[in-house]
Image (cartoon, rainbow, N blue to C red; front, side):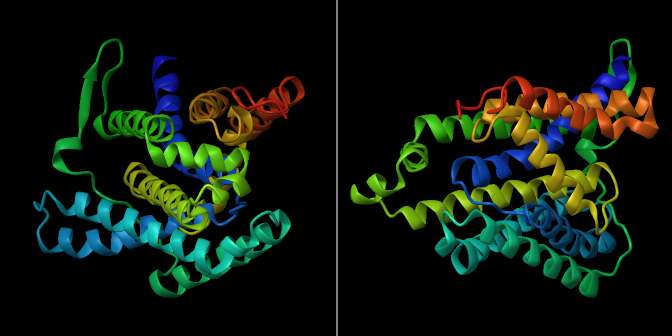
Length: 291
């Protein structure tokens, strides 16, 4: 029971890392980005293309994983900036148009990744400091890297809370959600703020791609899974709420692991049952603002 619950929490940590970026883009900036899962893939694939030759040249090269991490996050952030500037920035408020454009982009990105890298799954090797088991009471050995996932998720959550509540950028983002026109009238470069937030959200998706591809093999197709999971997590937790995203990720991650342990054939139903139950009681999500 303890192990299954801990597995759910580590999975929830990964979901939170990816979904927090989606919450920034979709929940705060009101930009419908159905290519968020593709940003996850871009981070994973670009990171692996940097990691693989370094690791092949010297398996004791301890910094290969961290260099790949920086490369994957940067690639996803740059891809996000291109999406926002070229495609989405001038469609603000046109949700259906944004959804259709980003669905098309996700298909194009998946095809290009398939053409460049092929369809074989791959996985990172965790750095030595994070490799192997950690002894825990009542459990025994447990993956050190999975525990590291929880630490990364906590760092992301605290960092985003501080950014949104204690910095000038966070004040501008929250003001833009309430009244975008008034923020622009105050002299704030709203399009530039939108690009910065989109880049941050995309970078978090890339971070999730590196972390996720280290915990388990990744291949084309997981982008759809992470997009749907991010949608469910944000809907359950409440759009634009980092705390709500964390609660939603924990509920979905733990429920998914317990569902696979108790009734694996129907475990996916449990995830959507939680979403339906939350929407029936609180349509705005657990910590979302009233609609």
